[in-house]
Image (cartoon, rainbow over all chains, first blue to last red; front, side, top):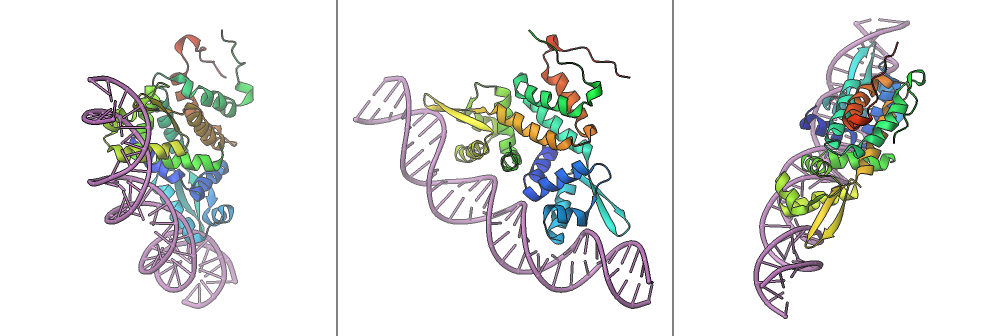
Length: 123
Length: 123
DNA sequence: CCAATATCTCAATTGTTATTGAAATGTAGA
DNA sequence: TCTACATTTCAATAACAATTGAGATATTGG
């Protein structure tokens, strides 16, 4: 993930329809959702949806595959991770206080409970 | 951090001058940098700089204070953390594989070595 | 107070992006 | 093959964002 890609990703996420599309797709998981389903979910015309999906695709945040007469879109999880890591890397140069709260929040959210270590007691 | 704020933040970060400004400020730490210093660092005219700094301020990503005849800008660390958490929260609904790599990268980057717990051995 | 410095404001120009509706493309079932 | 369905393309319009340069505002040292 370089600056150019990060800018494209941020621009893609800086639009409410697209942000909602990405959120829906992320929650939908790798199976993804058909374009028509997405149109209903975010309340956008099919032609406008197509425009936004293309923008997201160009930004590398989603991918598509044909399935029957539908086209199924899904989140590009590695790109999302990469963007987050790009942001974080820049937040940490000598200032861990910037992202420590985010790490804490994530650690709870992303670690299945049965694998979670007890919180350490720090001095 | 609600959707409106996240959109404003993403829009602010989706511009190369502003992204560089934020990165400089984040690395500079809480002490911040004078506007003139930033202008030199990112190569932008003072009037254009003023425009971009105001955009970042409106997005809540930076703050400013006067010091002598200079105005010192600094990163709004809590807003950055909040944005990251907003993004992450949406990435995790049932799909930890999305952000686990990011968490791993962050955990190393943001935890001072002396406080780091040994990596757990999981089955 | 005056001059120098630092930053901001304003208006004009240019370029980019979002939205709409109509028409075109591609797919599958009868 | 014909028809219905799902999605995309295209052109036009409207809204928004970035840049520039000139001038205004604020602060300090002499």
